[in-house]
Length: 83
Image (cartoon, helix red, strand yellow):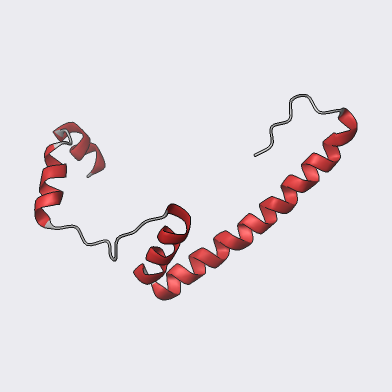
């Protein structure tokens, strides 16, 4: 990422335009990801988790013991707030 501190005023339109183009491309990518996930479910989620987050597991399955251990670390107050 390039950081610009106090760019010349004449550069402002160019900087704003580049950002808008990147934003449009980003929205296209987000739309594609959501469409793919709606159609393919967890298989697509795993694909994008690997692509964007370098996630390495084969599935999202969590055994009961792991869930129970994690549950013990959450306060009752927070559990009630979530419920």
